[in-house]
Length: 385
Image 1 (cartoon, rainbow, N blue to C red):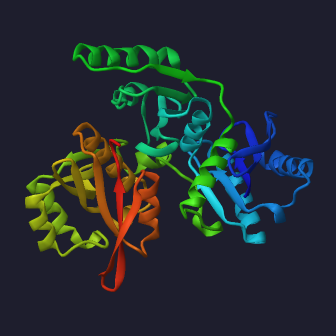
Image 2 (spheres, rainbow, N blue to C red):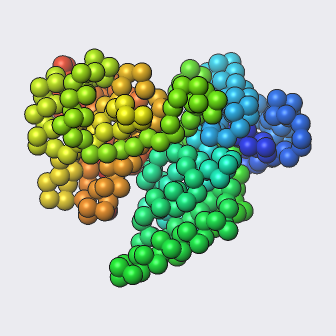
């Protein structure tokens, strides 16, 4: 499979062609010209050097953010045009995941903390785990201050690699403090390392796209959109919004608030069923500015966890809320020595299935005609395998 991969999320534009996971060639451009001026000539040069045309390309990959808003839009517009013209499948890869894949090329298994500067001492970051060569999300992409980010790096038992735009002078003392706490509690701590030189994001995105394609996670031009982790500051201030999104254990007051606004939530049980399940399961909510935007419920039996329900509000879809709740529960499971997490999903809910796969869930079976005639796909994440 030949993959054309493009990254325009930073000042350095990069394009690459891969054969499966092997890089055939990559070129990058550090000129001060806009990506709109340099991208197409770069692609043309790359393809000609390999004696290829778009007719030889089986899959297109493109970083979709976070990063430069303008650059991302240029990259996405270009690959959408290629996809439409030649009916080539396309995969959008977030820049933080592309960083983790670039790190994996160098270091193999471990935990990868991907970091992109978000200005004003904030960073875009995400944490990925690579086990036996397989990458999955451990903490979903977010934006926060460096000091807060370091506090979320809580799995020090495996090698940890920081990769991306690194402010080592600020990260290192904070991380050493984390290590000291672990050692004071007689816990094992593995080495950590900063990766400042790594294959470009077009290469990482190309490998990610190849893996996604083989999991059935791909689409065409209409399926790829920019990844924005927050609204512009001026808009947030105008709307009186806080940047803080909290995940908290659900209380009876929260359940009452959900009941009052139940029509705002999509594809969920009858409220009485939810109320009954609340008595037997552990539920968490995700909220901002005192508004509840979603919730997740699960039960644990010995070393297994069953996710009962994961729901976001209709007007808050595609904002990363489900990802945030999933990453929270996976971390909860990891530190509770849960061996595996199970869930079931309607076979027609491709968006949810694709999301679960990115978090390391595998299809393990089916329940025939479980959802009003539709099959239920049974999925498992082997957390501590």
